[in-house]
Each structure stands twice: as structure tokens, then as C-alpha cells.
Length: 335
Image 1: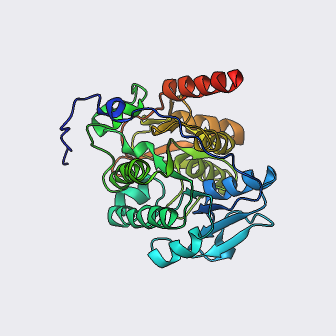
Image 2: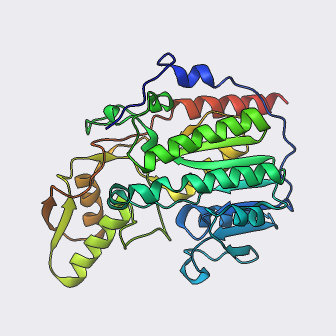
């Protein structure tokens, strides 16, 4: 595995992100909001979030046919377009005030370990959307990054020290998917600096909840474990296959917390990429315990040690987002 050598000091993250306040006009209820990846789990819930709060001009975009979308939000303009294609991004971004890019070719660990080239090609999506947002004068651009950007050497212990935002450098992210996310973060930064688009970046940790992917290879651990436990109970065959030894750890964030954090960050003056995730570390074995208890069943566990399992441990350090959000609240209180 190739490590990107830092040409600047180790605290490059904080040195490079000089804080500044961007004075934007507040988003109006009839401003056009574009959400890509809206046929998926998080973006679909984001469209619903805006709709419930009275926003009337929402354009939801996904390359999947409409009948495959996880959520259909009434009163929203739905477009079935592939935003890895530049011309489609022009159609999508025309008239937009804010763009939320959650489109990507991704899935759970089984998918991203076995489809690295496909994951890397998502760079076309963010590149073409940024160019289109610039062309049509969008004032704000949100990019959904991932905890997969973090240096793998800091994630080799299941009792991992929670990952701080600065731990993304020097770069050694998840191969394929993580590299694309880290590169696209930098693209957002430079579009902000060079062209004045107010870009915001969230590093999502594992998200779960209703309407999420639960089968087909793209599902995350909570949904996969729930599906396996349900299938075992219904079939009467009280066994479950677990990838790895089950001691690998993650944190898991509920979808409502994810959408709330996304809006708070996107509407703030915070220009640094920030973690959005839970800081409660849970092993896969513990996750199985929890789901078994809910289902009222106890299963025999079979460990598939050669299955894709990702890093040994990953958790979200939320100190920076808490500090910056608290400072924002205090600043607003004085105005």
C-alpha cells in the first residue's frame, strides 16, 4: 500500500484551514435545493428533511429508475440522471442555490473492497457537479465524505483511539473508496478558495435506520446483521455467519442525527471537514448481541475469517464539531 508523504508539517490539517466567516444570504423557502444520490438512503432522508421544513423547490436526482428509489418525497422534482456525466450536471445545477452531493458508487465493506475502480470513478460526480455549480452560480455546495478517508495505520486496534479530523493526513485512506473521498474533499477546498463557492464537507461514520440498504452486498453492518438474525429466526436454523472474528469495532449513527448534523454543518460558516458520527464504539459481536436480544433469539456464530472486514477499529472523535458548533451558537446569541 502506498502512503502519501506529507510535504508539510504533520499538523497540515489545521495549518491549511484558515478560518474565515462567509456571509451568505439565508436560504429562502423557495430557493432551489439540489440533492444528488436522492434515490439512496441518506440523500432521500435529506430531501424529506427539507420538505418537512417547508422548502418548496427541491430537485432530487439519482441514476436509478424511480421505482428503485428508497424514498419518494411528495412535491419534489425527481430526475433520473447519471451525474458522472458532465452534461447531466448542467441540467441538474441550472438555477440551483445550494447543491448537496451525496451521489457515489458505494456500499458496505464487501462492496468497497471488491469494487475499488468503481468507487474511484465517483470522482467524476463531484468534479462535474462542482464545475456545474460554479457555472450556474450556486452559492453553497455540500459534499458527503466518509470516515474511510482516515489513515489506516491509526485503525489497526479494535480499541481504537477515536479519529480526529487531522488524522486524515498524512494520507493512507481506505484503498479506492477512501482515496476518492479524500481527493474530492481537496477539490471542494480549492473550489472554495479559488472560486468562492461556500463548500462544506462532512465525514460520515456508519449510518443506519429505516429505508436503508439491507441486502444485495451494499448494506452496512447494522442492516446486514438485522437481516441475518431475522432470517435465522424465521427459518428456525439458529445460526449466523459473521465476517471476520467479530471483534472489529465501529460506531453507528442513526439517520435522523445524520440529517440534522448535515444541515447544521452545511448552513454554518465552518470550512473544515468535520466528523458526523456517534462516538460510541461497538464491536460486531456486541452488535449481534443487541439484535439477538431484540429478536428474542440466540444464534450459533460461524466466523468467516477470510471475508472483507475493513480496518480493525474506527470511532468518531467529536471534540472539534462540538467546539465549533458551540462557538457558532454563542456567536449567534450575541447578534
